[in-house]
Amino acid sequence: MVSRQLDEQIAARFAVGRRLRVLDVGMGQGTQALRLARAGHTVTGLERDATMIAAAREALAREPEGIRERMRIIEGDGRDTGVHFLPGSFDVVLCHGVLMYVEEPDPLVAGLARMLAPGGLLSLLVRNGDALAMRPGLAGDWAGALAAFDTTAYTNRLGLDVRADRLKDLTATLAGIGAPLRAWYGVRVFTDTAADGAEAPEDLQTLLAVEERAGRTDPYRGVAALLHLCGVRG
Image (cartoon, rainbow, N blue to C red):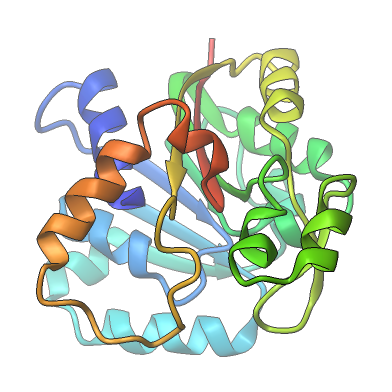
């Protein structure tokens, strides 16, 4: 879903065929970074976890030479983008699944926005702080659901204590750093309770169509497990 949404935003803001400069902060195993490199863009992945870096480099090594030349991997923290890059160095900056691990997200987001050239696209994927009661509620954990209404803290599926973000707060943050919100989507509206590693259903394409429609339609997107926010640098 995130890939489809990201491609939609890129197509809406950049000329067809333009090779973009992309920064993927907290790239993990490099799934999104590699996808964009295969599409012809020049991609820099920034990651601090050594295991993730090793996996990304292994995946990159299996790619054709032309793709390997378009992607580089840097070990570093997303909060230190100013150490590695000059302001305005990128057309697209991704930060997916990172903010939940950062206690104070505003400085990180501001640093990401500084990396964007004018008109550049900032893509954030965050845990939805307005819907934390959905997962325990749908699982029948009534005490957990009741407690989730009044907090943005939660324990993720890895057992880590992390945090979520509310749409109104991130909207204000993006406006304040000169990259106002232009579009947002819900991700995992109906599928958040699916077991990790579950086999894809036979009607996968129908499922994806439903998730895609719900992710852009009110009121469904507002209760999604994740929010995909897209801001544009003024």
